[in-house]
Amino acid sequence: KAGVTQTPRYLIKTRGQQVTLSCSPISGHRSVSWYQQTPGQGLQFLFEYFSETQRNKGNFPGRFSGRQFSNSRSEMNVSTLELGDSALYLCASSLVFQGGTDTQYFGPGTRLTVL
Amino acid sequence: QKEVEQNSGPLSVPEGAIASLNCTYSDRVSQSFFWYRQYSGKSPELIMSIYSNGDKEDGRFTAQLNKASQYVSLLIRDSQPSDSATYLCAVNFSGQGGKLIFGQGTELSVKP
Image (cartoon, rainbow over all chains, first blue to last red):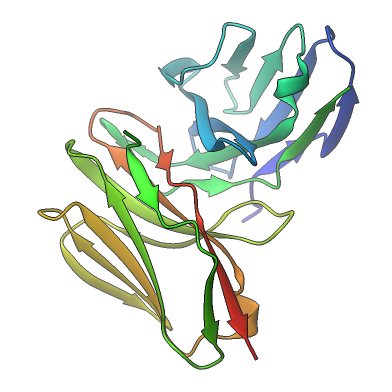
């Protein structure tokens, strides 16, 4: 089975711009979670999508948003980029059971640099 | 107070030794526990999941869970230089859907 794929792998943007990142989950996985990883804050949960609905959300400003399509592919968007948004953005997919999560498998990540 | 805590290390062990990595979590109903390994510049890869109290073994890796003590650990036997990486503990608290809370990670260095 192919793993989780993320595009693009690297992005360089300037402050004030917006960016869209894409994630394709493992075939059959219907849950997609997004995380931000920075040296100072570590891995932090952004949001999770299941059946095209946001099931859970982390403590990030509204500039961070996402969506999921009927084929389970997901996108996240960051508007009005700030320098502090520079990070590795990771997508993870999993099977899902009620109330919780099965094992999450991570994609290679998108390295975003904001200048 | 952080919900999931790990010693940041670095933890240095000689090749062939047992490496012991520890993780504690806050007093909430917890459901699933995961250990991931992350090499520098790479994404986390799953080592093991554990859901119930006790030990779970997979090759050179053993995860131990003690819910009463809110403690989960990972033992790596016969440590190899290729095990040098950051090890991340993650917890899925009950009712949190697909939200994993990660510790800060423990950096492990295995010296030849």
